[in-house]
Image (cartoon, rainbow, N blue to C red; front, side, top):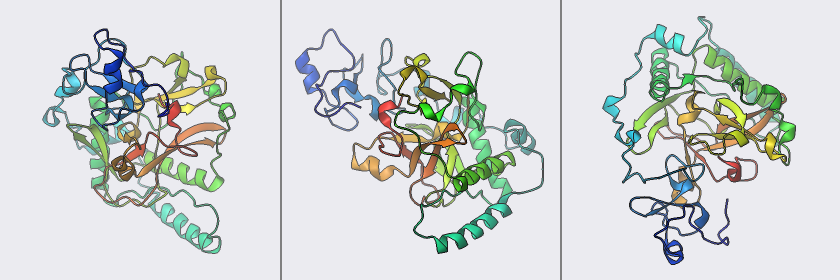
Length: 345
């Protein structure tokens, strides 16, 4: 990420714009003229927009012409909520779509038992590091079907298949390339207790007990995600999944949801997650930037990368209590142990 002291040079070179016009350009979203190297100029109206202020965020300057939302005539602009074909609320179709294990056995009781055991241990070791919590599914099976149908609608509309795991496709990065040891500066290791919580979330999903989230369509933000019940701080919301590929193969990719998996000291070993063909609900959770007080106020998730049993994984975790109906946002500009946006593509 460029610093405020860096020379302000517009990201797109325009033949009819002078250097003075570059210096006067400000972002239409945040009003700032800083981070000039990330200011993108509309090819129609000449207004400026930071790459990280756009929704969806742009990973890099697009190849060819680019038009802002007001000037764009792309098909995405013309998506209307009434034209989106809703996935049928039929249990058998939803079970097949998400490949749910056909079993009446529930793991909800296991969650409550684990929570009770954990509560007793925390009472004695309150000074220890806070642990991650598995999500608590909605109690009503019919409501869970509605939640899954909303996700199936979004995935179907965007042409993606459901996957709740990292996938390794021939011609992309092999699984052997996912080595947390490559991470520049090292990668934090997920503890045994937190790994159990993550595995419990995975098991619940396989049983059709999904996180209490609803995917909705917003005319400005597109598909976005809302909490369908109260969610406690430190709860695992979901894992960020998709096809794993080398960053060098995706540097000019136009995808708006590519996520860094490994930022290696050797750039040729850096990996990204590409959720355009296979993904879960993480793809539809919106990011915010932390350049404004409004952005910081919106953030209710953090994006953290962990070494999980020798494999790099990305988790979205609640960083405060989340109310029912609240939209989920994670920070594109986090630092330290959270997601490093200087590597976001």
